Length: 278
Ligand SMILES: [Cu+2]
Image 1: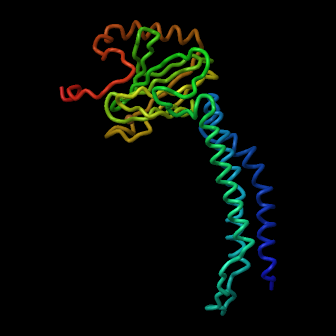
Image 2: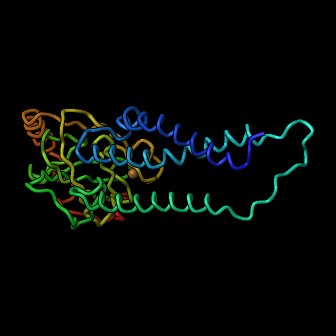
């Protein structure tokens, strides 16, 4: 029925029309709802990155679905046509060039885009190690995140080294998380803040973030770290300056009696074999 020459053009036309319909939906409907939300500038840039990835893959996804649908309808064998395979194709110059050129362009674009995003100020929300290449300006509030089986605790070195069980941050401040561990490898994942940084014993892994609005966020361990890994989660809070000041003052009073039982403040810790063995 249809000429063989027409198939390629029909598939190309359907792909173009399909992409023109789907792409605005991806950019304006799906994109703004991509994880991890817009809690911090780092998280916002991750939403942008996820949207760019979606945009790049949209024409390829549409093409594959169009091709599948087209093959299922146009190349379907009629009843009684069993055994009638098409002639073997040894090569098709134009489609090979088109596929190689488009996929190469997509991969090169993503490589360049990904590299520039990683080098951008504040990094990608992951830990940048003990000596970050790029540092935000100003004086970020240092907050030490200590992973241990199976909870995170938080130390505030500029507030007498008080250590708390919940993470509370002042709004509108740059924060420097210093992520470390007392035992196994954990990963500090503050989802809505766009931060996911490895917690390794003996390492001071620094991740920068800037709080933008009063909110709550999820904290989880994102590295299988033993039996109760799945329970290693809590809720963090971004609060006003006044609320933070009164909260940290109350914590300093509350935890003063136990401070002497905690290990001395250090930028990193190594596992203590006698700790759990008693
Ligand atoms: Cu863990």
